[in-house]
Length: 215
Image (cartoon, rainbow, N blue to C red; front, side, top):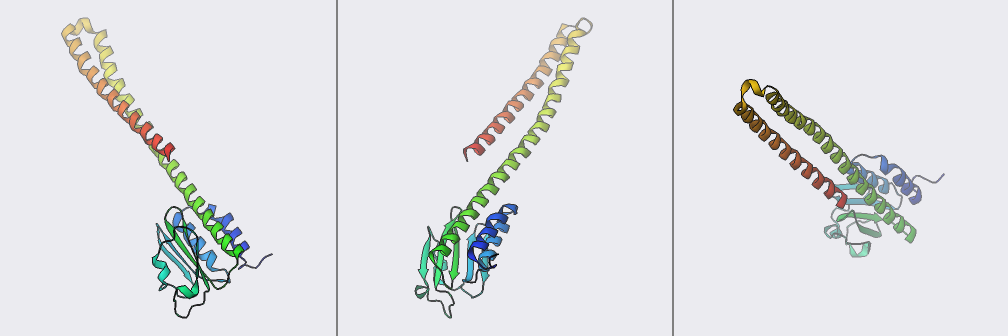
């Protein structure tokens, strides 16, 4: 069995466990802490939409490169970062999940380690994207459930005036044509208003679902 600080073991741990986490913040914290367990890693800094996350064996917060947001994978020689009492030799900076930045400080590294780190953040991006899709599905289900309850309410609002209309027609000879006309017209307007509300609710639901499908 590989050592706990082996880069491939850490990557496997992240790849298998990150999908069990329910919140984006938990995912980011997990990746940050797991990478920091690497023997060759001295610090991890992540600037995410949920905030900034740190896991450090050396204080790198004064590093000037943390001011720059990486647009792609960048490998910076420690001689360029001007950090005092530095333990790291390389800084691996990369972007993940459309605009978030990660900075991994390494005491030593080879091409395999750097590629695995990149792969880890690809996994994180996919996990975050999947979580967003799942959240959207939950919102749609909740919206549909509320609509079903609302439609049931509207059906009662149609049924009641319809019953009045049918009753008025049945006893038309007793109450007279004018009264029947008055009751039919008044309750027909109520039905029309309810149908207009139903049509509006249907349109809003279709628009909401369409926006979700287009994402």
